[in-house]
Length: 429
Ligand SMILES: Cc1ncc(COP(=O)(O)O)c(C=O)c1O
Image (cartoon, rainbow, N blue to C red; front, side, top):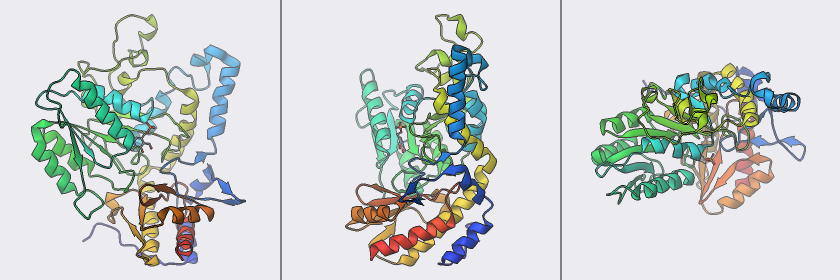
């Protein structure tokens, strides 16, 4: 039997409203501020870019400002949430979201910075094993990070020609086949130092088979990392059980941490005490008991915390704390459950438009995607995007030909999805 749930949908506003009435998560929408355009709520489908603001975020940030106002430096120990261990207040909720243990998870820095920090430890090219496997269409920042790491090592390591293996979909296809990814890893075997893929591709919305990729990478003797920017808070993840070595992700997308929000990193428990791994050290990664003895020698904290460099941005973390509390209440399994249905409904309605100028490039298999659908538009895609925006839709345009639409289960409704499809149909006329 096909493990996918077969859902019966109807193309009517009444049906969408009934789905909303039956949705056990529907009340979470009221916990977020939804932007307005000309007096009405925007149909917000850009949570894959910047998640909505939890209503509690302002109070949480203001609380820290008040503590700063009233306590000054004493806030490090006397604030209602003391600043010294502040990042720890986020650890266990963040770990749960990506299927990790607290010792494997730390909230710190920003995403590309974390990719670099982790590659310092996990990209250790040798003359024989020096290649990095990425997606050809990886997010540009990842491509720049990886290429600059290769260039950085070329200064001291021989044999780094052709160090980048870029995975490309087959001719006429938009997404990568798992079998092709695994075959490349097997073929390049001994020459691969790390496999570094996105959990979900930002452009196509394809979710990769991370467990199988981690297994194949390890079999080849490589280290395996993931950029979870589009996966954290979107898919059910099991970073620990899938045996991934490291991961990094931002928290301004599905995790609703706010613009430029503080990012996070996962480092598998088996590396927790790998103190021989090179790392760019800083005092926040140093043993907590002796940090303030101000000694000259770095003693890393076991686990992911040992990769911290600087003391953390409290105001950003306060905003993120507001959102992670909501995630804890809702729970990833329930969110993913709704997400499949919500995005399945969007797919059904798009199919019903039946216009050959638009096609969905995201995989149809719910296991191989998150909430985002990427709609490829033939010819005047940009002007179609401008038209839907003028109708109160927030969706984004990605060059060269895609409109990304991400119904987020925490705050989008089936009625949002229905209204979007109606607007799209109208704008295609
Ligand atoms: C997949 C992916 N990687 C990296 C980045 C860059 O993130 P940052 O600017 O936080 O380093 C983004 C930003 O959207 C992204 O989507």
